[in-house]
Image (cartoon, rainbow, N blue to C red):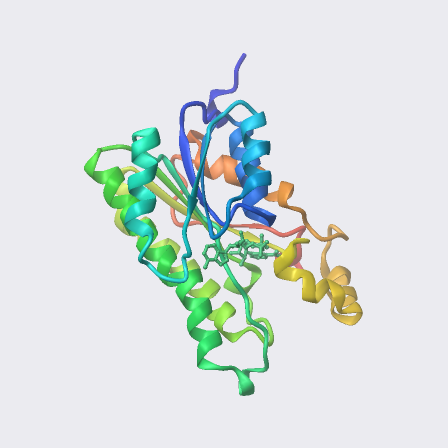
Length: 253
Ligand code: NAD
């Protein structure tokens, strides 16, 4: 018997920042479940596009810099031109800047908040408006962090953005749940991607982190694909405003 609970055949997902890392892992996971993918990136995500198309679904590449809200209308418009509508939005694009709080610059504050929170909110708003206008169900998945729950160190704007995102996920869920839109988040633990390269290259920090992960190893982009499929599919229709940790047990310590 076909498992329809997790089936995404015929659906379309917009995923921001899917040329690499976790975004790429989720694009491949959703594509394997039958979903067409709209990849929003600063540069053509050639490898992701090739891998997604090899799974027999369509891939539309949209070039956009989410450091500003300017490209948002065009992202929705191009998606609608090709697929009619988008059913799923994965807000994955994110950046991090590391410096002591005492030395942290306004530029490093603004750059991170603009991508991680401001563009995320206005893209979600545009997606939700389109779903409501068309009276269609929608699924929004925000990529949060362990620093949605914890303070972290030397990453003030990142912590502010990801802690803010946990609250914003709840707010959007409160306002849009009754209109058929599920808004949830995934909080990845320590995953081996560009985002954590500096930590993994620092022998002391890397050892400290590994010693604290009950699973005993860094996560991989494939590790969050299952959570993304769940939150994108009808299996999660009554799940609203939740932030799901996929962290090898980190928060359980
Ligand atoms: P990554 O650096 O490989 O991916 C970040 C993605 O965001 C890339 O595709 C990048 O091109 C895109 N991006 C950045 N700025 C952009 C902009 N201005 N416009 C458009 N796209 C932009 O790192 P990753 O670990 O895969 O990060 C993906 C998400 O996961 C981020 O939101 C990150 O904060 C979050 N996260 C990562 C970890 C981890 O351990 N790796 C942990 C928690 C949360």
